Image (tube, rainbow over all chains, first blue to last red):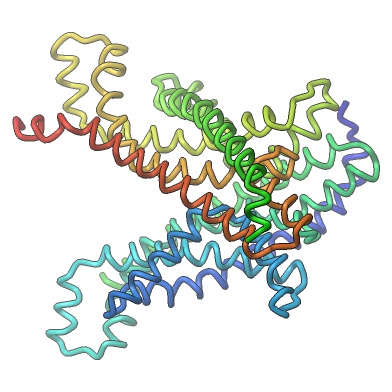
Length: 222
Length: 221
């Protein structure tokens, strides 16, 4: 049965690993946010070939499992002379996968802007950069936040996949403790509870951030 | 290329296992999603809260950890599941919780007037729910269900971690044996993509079939 003393003893190890999981998530999330921008812009490009091929790539990445993409990168990259640590490979796979999701989020945000806003910007002869920076983006960002936040939580819950390529994160450490002590119940249960606690906290923070950001922009407009 | 031809039976058996896990988990998830979606709108506050807690729990714990727990930790409590049963139950629980949001959203999108009209016509609450609201809600669920099914399909690859011999598992076996990394994983990705396209295509077809009557009703309005 569940051994609480043992659970307490392994908790610090798991907490250490949790920190790794968190920073892998944050780093990959920032990279995904950045990667999403060029992908979203390419999908709105003037040339149909560029639009179509970007759409095809994004759809392909979104419809195939992250785990296989991870294996692909991990085992194929050394063949092309690119040697990366498991951690770097994992971050690249996560950010590429979610970058494609983010490009969809950006696209839906941009498409939600009424045409009149673009027309008005043209009528006021704002330059293209200013149209984007001070008219379109401020309006597009607010509806994007909940979706982006959702993907942040999703991403965090997918970090245990990196344990398959021996990245030392929470799942890897729990499995290791299990294999060393022949007790799987405590480490894996703790790992699950830590995930639960952190994803609920993250969801709450995102809801707060949403409310805060929404308020700030509304106040500025009024 | 030779590696692919040689491993074609392994791939085929992997695809079949993937499809089996996918279909069974989808059935479990659909049943759970419907039940939870309905319970989350129950007039009884305790039932509502219990259903919400259930959903938050299974959404909050990572799928990988859940499958691992069912396969490696549950035996310590005296319950041993086979790898594929653990995968089907785990994926069904996680995606059932996700799906309940879809059910809830679709139910809430049905106009109040439908409830009011049913009450005016003397339908009981249960009759209204099952023969008036749900049939309309199911149609509105279909587009997001397509997305959810693709997520579930991608999730089945996680079953390889607990040794279910599905497509991802077989492909990594083939890779360790043949070292043909790029062709093997590329074809596996293409296979997953093809299954995903078939699933979304089927959903779109169902949408057209089930939605045939809709324009007429709109017209009457």
